[in-house]
Length: 394
Image 1: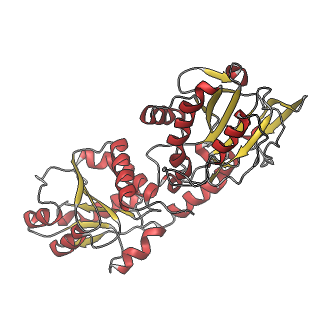
Image 2 (image 1 turned 180 degrees about the vertical axis):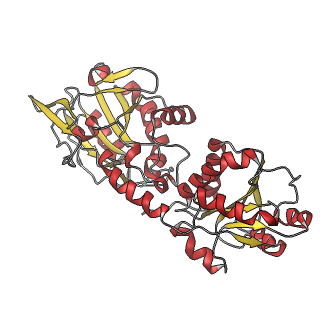
Image 3 (image 1 turned 135 degrees about the horizontal axis):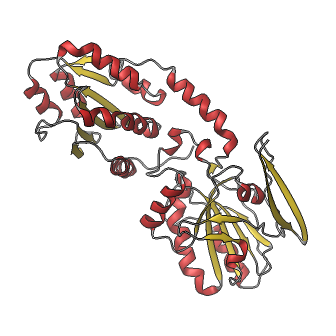
């Protein structure tokens, strides 16, 4: 059995935590007055940080967060602004990613441009211009996250000069709204601390995605198995159906990909399209693939789509059937490819692969000819979904 040790100071007593690979450890959140557990974690800036790295700060705010959670994403800019505003007041902020890649379902990335791996954390730092360190605790056994008892993202802990816990809980009650919150819970606590007053509300509920622990990997594997067992089909499509799909008289953001089994870039990018669909299908988003192979190659088209395994996600099934369809995979087998092309995208010049992103109501908000760049595609999908739909709690 793999074991790792993690040393923490609780009150004034040295305690050693032994974290095992299994079974599921019991995670208990630090109590007010507890000493901050030590840690040794890599930062996106190439440095390794320990609790002692912040010894010069009078107060320390430790935020357990991640890349994918919509609550964490909404709070990210506000926490970064907090770090700027309170730096000169003796307050240091450190963010720690508590998510294990093994414990995240694909669809749990529905609101995120980025995965939860270490390299993706660097992209988050760059995009948001984070002024505070961002550390990685996603590797088993996620010792720091366990020792602090980080139950959700973001989970905030504020420590005093002697690194005793003064506040733990939410950053604010804004949940998935990146704008101003009604109750700035952590800021209020910090203001009381700076004023020399006891914190009137030292704990609060942490509203956010539950921490993605490494031991959730069995659940992830089960969901992958369910996906692998879903049926896959390909149906013929004519120009009239193509016009209907392009009109997009739904509430869904619709990505249409035109491809062929004889097109190298088409074949190469197809697995990424499958993952993209899985990733965002929880939201009003769907992927429609249309092969323009010769009609004599219908079996080859079907075999390829089945091999790549592109079924309907369970969140898409109902809306597709409501439109009178059974699949989102099609093969154009007509004779008038010119009319078909005009129906899908009048600006398409003919080369494949060709992709169009169509907003509800039929407006093409993005198009791309040639092999897709995964990060660019994620960025545009997340941005367009944010415009079309105000995030809802779940």
